[in-house]
Image (cartoon, rainbow over all chains, first blue to last red):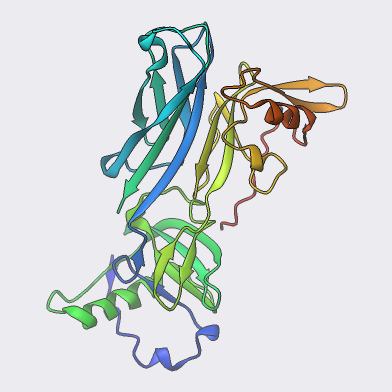
Length: 115
Length: 184
């Protein structure tokens, strides 16, 4: 079912405090991007995967960036400290590493959604 | 009919008021209209179907694809007609099975808990200054819930460990401590 709507020109004479107006998409501007950032910790000796819940995004216009990691692992176990992060779905970021190590690893991430 | 999502802000301050999502009549816009005339017709349609109240400015926020409630911290600049999210709230995530605090996260929109992960908004609490280093687990003591910080100075500095140990958590993990969102 559809209806025809007439322009508001005369109605706009009424003070805004006593009326309402709704702007359709495209009639207002918006900040060009939305950014979330976080850190997740993979526990020593046990964890090779970790998931973080984020605010819902549209995955087709969202990029995930690696924010670096922190650990006090002193050996050359690259496969234990370097993680791969992925945007698993609209509300989840996942970090994976090949193997665990005797040290904890904190992995940072940035989720940028563009409009 | 089509499903649309509307968010409303105060016309004077731009503060968030409420939002809702539902089915509304399709607009019947004359295809010959262009420019300002077309925009006025769309504004008339949106104003008619959105159910705005006096003193409110409504925005059709359907293209964002966000859940209802996600606009609660946003601000609308009435002069510039610009929607912005000025502040990022700080969250910690707790694994419900292990009670491990394993994620610190910041977002300008709410982060919702899942059956596996409890998300808590710590913005404005005594924990907020330590955000980014709040890792460890939640433990139950005689006087309530407390934090047992991760004993790893590379991830949780020693002064932060002491501060987290001294904090007392005012929530019950049995029921989810969700901040009330102002929505219809």
